[in-house]
Image (cartoon, rainbow, N blue to C red; front, side, top):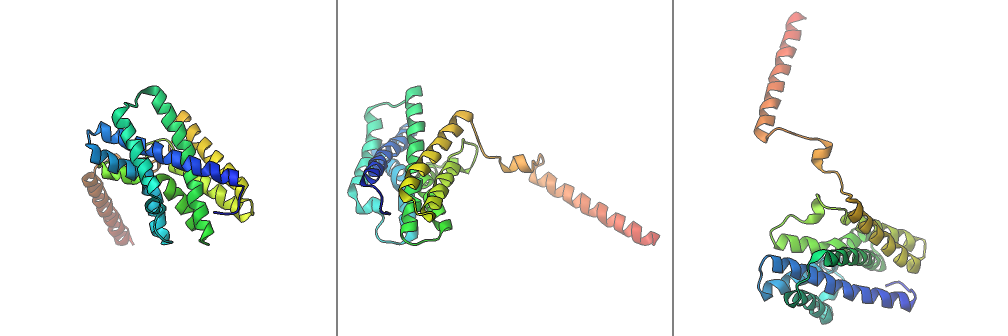
Length: 242
């Protein structure tokens, strides 16, 4: 980590651990909805809470992933999953807490990932990717483990985009030599963006929005063949007239 005020680092470390518990609870909630046993709950909590950081550290190849080197991370992730087994977290209040809390953690983890990459001298593009991966990687692994299309692939309110914005902000402040200010600004911007996207229902356009196709693949193939034959006939007709 860059040299910043110890208070800021302490806040980040606290939010990091809170994020592990919260995302463990989110994974546990999904496991409970799928009627998984306690092993399934534990694994889904671990994937959800620690998957992004483990992917980041594995790709960076800078020693043992932090989630494994520090056993407390795994313990808190599993604790978050176990909480939802004994306490039924549901309803509007839980959803609002989850959405807003997760948005803050998204900003924190995006900054943590990008800062770690920058600390090891990686280029800005790599830092940008590592920040985003840290923030969304766990949810992506969790969705794949449950047989679902990862929610970040589209159809949901913006999530990966705020992570990219947060990472980019941190990279910019680091380049300017203001790491401490960047950690606060990037987290606030990313979290605020994610919360605003939730309340406004912002989503990215899908491929169908850009180039809608209302035919099946077989129909499209037939249409293309007809167009080719028509073009060939017109070309022969033009040559005959010449």
